[in-house]
Image (tube, rainbow, N blue to C red; front, side, top):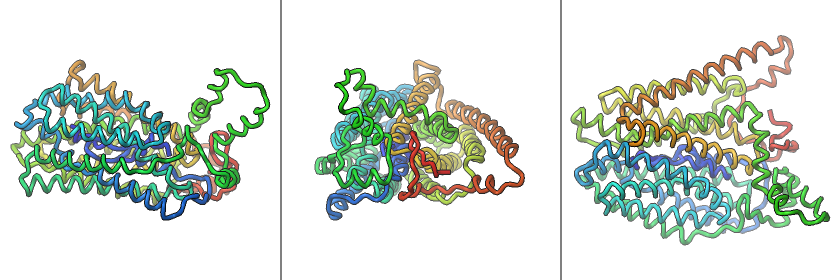
Amino acid sequence: MVADYTAESGDGSDGEKKMDLKALASYDRGGHEDGDVEMIASEGLSPSTGPIEEAEEPRKWKWAVFFLCLFGFMASIKPGEPFITPNLLSPEKNFTREQVTNEITPVLTYSYMMVLVPAFLLTDLMRYKPILIIQGVSQVVIWLLLLLGSTLIEMQLMEVFYGVTMACRVAYSSYIFSLVSPALYQRVAGYSRSAVLLGVFTSSVLGQLCISLGNVSFYTLSAISLGFVSFGLILTLFLPWPKRSLFFHRTWNPEQKDVAAVATKSELDRMNQQESVSSSAPPLCPASCWRDSVFVQMLLELRNVITRPSLRLWSLWWVFNSTGYYLVLFYVHILWNKVSLDAENKNIYNGGVEAASTLLSALTSFTAGYVKIRWNVWSELVIGVITALQAGLLLLMGTTGNIWVCYGAYVLFRGFYQFLVPIATFQIASSLTKELCALVFGINTFLGTILKSILNLIFSDKRGLALDVQSQFLVYFVYFIILTVVYFVCAAVVIIRHYRNQPWGGGGAREQAAPTELSPMAANSGAEPLSNGRSAKAQ
């Protein structure tokens, strides 16, 4: 349950650039950092703003990045996280499976949905550090409740703080980009992602060793986790306080402004130019000032985004497929408990499975960077095939009585999703400025969270159908089958249209359809960005 929340990494992807938002989605409850979302934030942040010299001394920013990565590693070490569901279902807590499935776990999604938008806005407004402190405090409260709590209300409150923790993870994914110049974004994004993935892997392995070899009780494991998250909270107090952020604190020095103006012009730069032209005009009324604000201009810019087929496709994938992915993560530990008890298997290997799935997810994410196909033609088909495979794995998990088959299907399910995360990140982020990209990922994550809450309320919550966990996985199977059919229909339309419109003798069409690599746009590109940030030379 909580364990099931590997949340927005590790996910993921997320990330999850303000993709931080993105990042939002990235970590799941089980500690998986998917998604996503969060790391997405990092990956998507490959900027096209050109090389800008950092005003600070290299030694200073390197130390700051190292300290933040150390914090990311330590904050991810919670050996008890993969075993929270077994803990709740054990004689120590003595909750029933129905209580955990229909009354405790659903609270996480509702809490996450309520906190997500405020966390996103306050992260930028308060410049990251206070949100990281709130995240650390929430982590401490979670493990205190798991140690000392014994009632249903206390466990539901624990889920509320889990939602707060997940929403606040956006601060970590975006914080690191306030420490360095845009030219270093891609490198430090790799550092921060690697630190979290290493922490998640270490945490899962340590927890499994404690359970399998040390015969450690769930109570002791929770106490160990409390010690690690308390140390992580102490580390946040010593983090440097950034002087700038993406939207509300855009304070550049003169040298940075000059170089950035030559390299590229973001939407915000264009707005600043418009403001300078009209500076001699009479003061605007409050309504006009609000309309001209950065955030409102970004929202208006979204109209250009939804008209782009590629951005629309991958944004919809982000919303719908990540919804199913995180619902599986939230409830899979309950499924494992049921399958193990039905097979009279008392051994628990949740930590080992989470470690294996983290490694496979990292491998598939890395492999995706080397895939070369014509994404404008084959995206729908690739998504459809992978979604179909995930649907088959969900059917296998929901019907098998063999716990090892269930474990293996879960590892593959996560790996398939994480394969598409960097592709989606690139397809969305490569043609947008980081400001608009952050907003797009944030909205995608929020819409996915709303959809998760709706499905939770209908199928999982006690106030809805209150289905048992195996029935829920059959619902997820049907959900992915519906998505598969839609993707295949869209793929057929796109492919037929492509070959029908393709000239028979021209080399230009062949050149235009050249395979695309998952690599960021050249930083020194001299192309003039369009209003939505897309370079005129891109694709």
